[in-house]
Length: 94
Image (cartoon, rainbow, N blue to C red):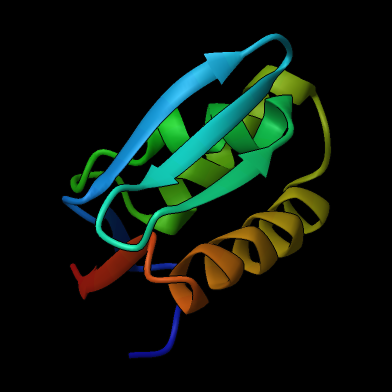
């Protein structure tokens, strides 16, 4: 499934998150892998709740960072694509 503004990201069940200093750790217990994400990536992870669409997450980030939506949206989509390619999230359509 291709990521779009109406996609709803969901966290994979076997992924646990914890803060480590300024970064976040995404731990895949079934694969024994850890992905380190920066502070912004960790904030995005915390916004993924299986309810909010990509568009809604983008708007929340825009409010937090006072940046333009197109810039944030592109970075968000790129980050979510990375998470999806590593099986850290999956998508459903609204």
